[in-house]
Image (cartoon, rainbow, N blue to C red; front, side, top):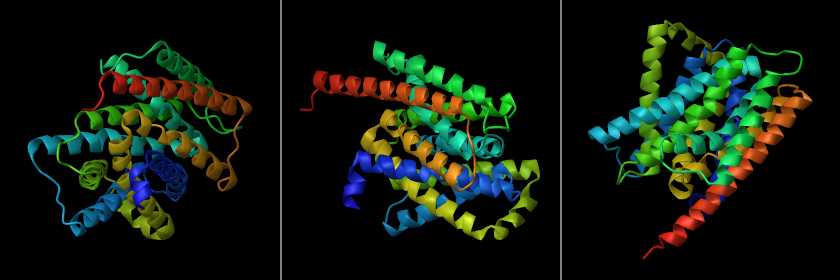
Length: 306
């Protein structure tokens, strides 16, 4: 466990595998009639309660000063509430595997947003990665989901909004990480904040009665809460150990797991063009990652630790 906690690669693989379970489990839940906002609440409330129990057991506490509360609220919205609502809204239309492919765009959008916001300027290699990733995204978007059941373009566009929100979260969490706050405390606090935000939305939307559907799928609920709790504890640790761009690579593993489960377990089928676009995306992400690795090495060389 100590090796996992300190290894960026091990954390990456574990996070990605747990992330890949989200679209298939969400597809099963929405097929049972559970609204996307309710299922997003299940994830954040379940994970938040489990993680707060861990925080209390470790004798730690969540800081509630103004800066930390703002951080938790913004993180909750752009990293959890919005992406999860999008995921569970589009997965019945696009398929679990196709939705999982959206995760792979997170590194490309992370670098693109970093550039737009002036956080960093990309090298020629980084710019090439962004462009290749964009070509891959357009190629995948053109297939519009499963073979023989093309979705309306609005669902594809909403699917593409998933990595945009995740990328914004990657940048914000790193830029505004509160001092003297650990990964468990931030994971617990941000998920509880997301649960509160989602519950308000559920009440406004008049969906409270849909909670009665959850007892009909107890194993799916249990698996989702267990996977989310484990993933988000490791998620913030990976953020601390690896940084935002390395963190965004969990989409590779998550996409692969989502595709395998979607095809073998849920019987999904995708056209050759979808696989071609996914391969192009992979190239774009690999180039983007290589550019980031070179930039990080250059930064270490230019600013060695004392």
